[in-house]
Image (cartoon, rainbow, N blue to C red):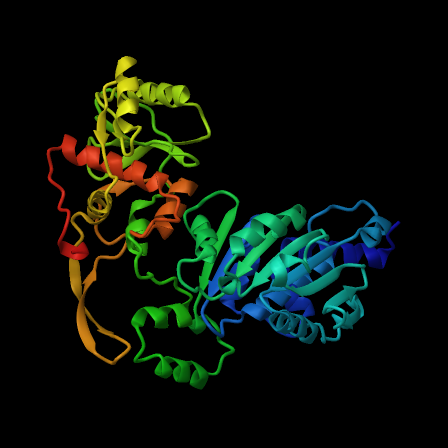
Length: 480
């Protein structure tokens, strides 16, 4: 049974479970700033990504969230005091190195020094690994991701955070092979770190940005942190004044910057992907449709993209991706989608020695197709340039800005309309995860990349241009 004092404590505990900010403001030595408050209250999805600029306070907010989880044993519901005390509850803060993991541990220890918090902690220990044991039995661990996460494996955690996730080159492998398997039911994973280009961290960040269920993403700027001395901000700003403006935005404002060689810019993707669009739209008799199919080669996927080209911008109304299915099933899917959207001739990728055979097999089944060969590098570039053109159609320059290269040379560059400024671009798509992931990292040197979704979409765009008798520019303009 709960005593009267325990009942009051239980009521407060319930409030803390639903509002970590209330717990932090009540118990800890430091209060969160507005950006940290936003993160603490909204990062409740299975996978959350935070990309702050330098000195935003990421180590502090990581420590705050771990403490709040451990103090309340957040997640499971307990019927009795004994159940709550006996229940095993562990969290872990992971970093690329042991030194980085120690930073979060020491920040958590510092935050726990308030008069009201001290009685809730049993002990602080730095060996064999840094960890904090709370009076309710909960444990906060801090460990390195070194050696493919061998120091993480073998445990179950209610909450996992990965600090400086942008520096972990094998983040996807670590997530799929270790981290996700270590998450106890109903828990959360947080990926936190300043952006380092379009790497694995960007892969997870874009999912939250584009409204994929189960993901949440947030950026943070150095200017969000009111506890940082103004002279500190001015000093960093001055040091970066002569750097590439994109690098400045990355370091200070937590922005992912375009990397050399990527075919599609962040602005193009932000304009094209619309989370409000349904994943599939039904056929409408008064509308016109085209479809592009990139067909499986060995271990590849077969991808089909249907565009409604009745009005501009064109809309992706049907998307499917098949793996390891028989050719008969692929032929049947091409026929079914053709009939469903009343498409006269699907466009297919007929690259390779089997391309003509595929066309012949489809014709035998009464399926007329337009075969497109993109076996040469020039043909691939032509196809991708058409897709780039569709993403940029009617985009206007709204001014100029100065760019400084590594040698200090200043050049003027056109400032183009940003996403949401004007209705530029002839393509709008719902955020299909496979498609947005491939487009986010696609480069012309695509030897080791998954490209099925990109080429399926590019073929559909090619079909749209040809159906409208519009000759898309191939070289020149922004991409010459």
